[in-house]
Image (cartoon, rainbow, N blue to C red; front, side):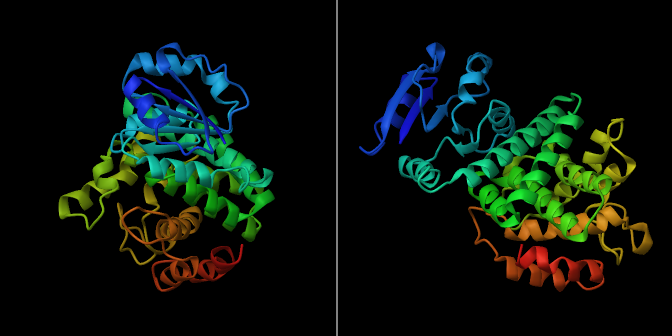
Length: 347
């Protein structure tokens, strides 16, 4: 495998280069003078502080060349959202913490080896990268008080829908869980599961578009919540849980003035944690007050949360996750839960 390392300090470049096994052909350069002239690469590893505007500017100059390399791994500060969002905006196909060990980095590159990944899987991975970049852009916009790119998110959702229609849900779940973490992983999983659920139900195109757009945006209110809380490896305390529970309203408030979003999508962003029995939040809706799109999205959201990969807990199987969803009597619409069985277990 041919790997190119780009770092913003000599120390980072040297440390990364020194730990690759002999079967890797490794080249490197400092970011400040990087030209990416070394062609025909399998992967590039970027180790740079993305809080530094000069580093961001230098990477933007390389963007066209970076995007010609199929695997682009960025190493960033683990608990800082803006650098993660910035990495995806700069074309990362995977973001890893800067504290990753050499063995872990090599293992990730090995898992992405073309020996293991055929053209079909590379296509799925390209779609996941585009989806992650779109979600990162949304979160970045909310953090900076800028306008959210609704058309870009809708286009990413359309690509996800096309990818799942062509390759199936299982490949999508595998790709997302392998290459993305945390909130971005969750949003991508929810979108994929929602798309497949909509396809299985035979939704018409306009309803499909509303569903995958709502899924892409549903957790945007988490943009301002610290990653140390979102990714906490343990039970949240009362204050942390209260902060988490503000995200539906925060997301709604961030998006409500955007003319590009329908009322149905805004409703789903605000109410995707509502239950039919009135026990949800933020507005304790019940019965007929819970819209059809929310009924669909809530099932997908719960299922995706259960099957996503987290470093601090075991991943629940799709069978067990569906069992949890099926056991939520009175909270979720029973016929929809029954219809979801095929999506959860066989697609």
